[in-house]
Amino acid sequence: MSDFAELHYEGQTYKLPVVVGTENEKALDISKLRGESGLITIDPGFKNTGSTKSAITFLDGEKGILRYRGYPIEQLAEKSSFLEVAYLIIFGELPTKAELEEWTSDITYHTLIHEDFKRILEGFPSNSHPMGVLSSLVTSLTAFYPESLDPSRSADEVRMSIVRLLAKMPTLAAWSYKNEIGQPTVYPDNNLDYGGNFLRMMFATPAEGFEVDPIVSDALNKLLILHAEHEQNCSTSTVRIVGSSHASLYASVSAGINALWGPLHGGANQAVIEMLENIKADGGDTDKYLAKAKDKDDPFRLMGFGHRVYKNFDPRARIIKKAADEVLAKLGVNDPVLDIAKRLEEAALQDPYFVERKLYPNVDFYSGIIYRALGIPTNMFTVMFAMGRLPGWIAQWREMRKNGEPIGRPRQVYTGENERHYVDVNQR
Ligand code: CMC
Image (cartoon, rainbow, N blue to C red):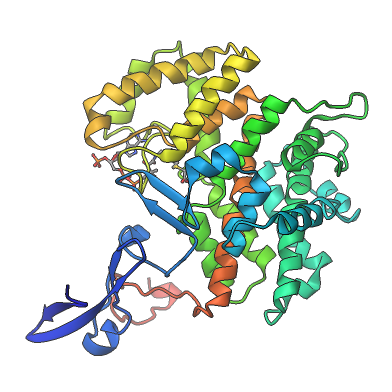
């Protein structure tokens, strides 16, 4: 097997080294190409560009494989807890019993946030979308922990920032929601587990407490694990590129939250339910919306279908579909919007347009459905995704810094005007 490829251009031959990953994935190293030939490569959307080497997640979109640090997602979703998976993703190995206890205890005892956060929250109009509030609150952590801004901190100090971020994220997320609905915030309860504590801060009120339903908190645990990491997608690449300037962990993750917000990425789970509600309000005619999705002159897309890398099935969607069916059955949910989801899914899976383009329901199709069944409000769906993705963003930020990666700075092919001369405004 050759360890380089040759590029022939204008009578010259350039050797491009082949980089091979542990799963035999191969890439051409073009980092010296511009210096040698004057050529750059172009790949809008980075559809075929590796931005880094990473030891965190292996994903095979054709075979539907997803592994965190070598462990199949199916096993982790079935057997592990979110905090254990977070430890695995961030530090590379499953924790020992003692390490897991310490990790869980550290995260449990840093859930409280400074009272001044309430003044920041009060500055937001109620009705603010919780994703915007959450990203601002995460950036605000830099003001409360200014030492996190120092790029030369020790591993222990970085660990403290990581613990604080994981611990405070559910509190910040739930408080973003309480701000939106104009209710008083609820303080964390350190007797509850990660997901249960979050649910209580979301749903308890001074008038009524909140009992955490184990079915709901189990489903939440699974959802958080399934979202925990997904290699170099839009938000994760954002976290790495922001962090590559040596911006702090909190600033980098806040940027990731904003990237996740868009409807083509994490915002899809909210967009799925909004789409289903629109179809219902329009008489429930799923065929009409399938036709719209197929019409090239119509910008409508079937939200929750298709994926940049999974072209046969999304392994997370398989697990979550099963969990969604179980939760709906156990909770006895009967929701006409979910009936529309089922009809749409069945029709799209048999429709040649979707089959030929390998467009299958993705994780967001089912996560939207399950969140709705769990009583999570629609505009909190992407916040739930952000909470789940946090270990992945942290791990990628940490890996990038540990590897001493250079600042991210792509090239471009300029297509604008050639040089021209300024004309005075009165002569234009
Ligand atoms: N509905 C209708 N047509 C679609 C859809 C869809 N949801 N997705 C892709 N297509 C068509 C697209 O029009 C194109 O057709 P053609 O080849 O005739 O021009 C073809 O399928 C390929 O699409 P693409 O846009 O080149 O594919 P992509 O890899 O750039 O986009 C995607 C992937 C996820 C952005 C896209 O499938 C999409 O917009 N899906 C809906 C939004 C969504 O559910 N996003 C969540 C992604 S999963 C969560 C995450 O990891 O962020």
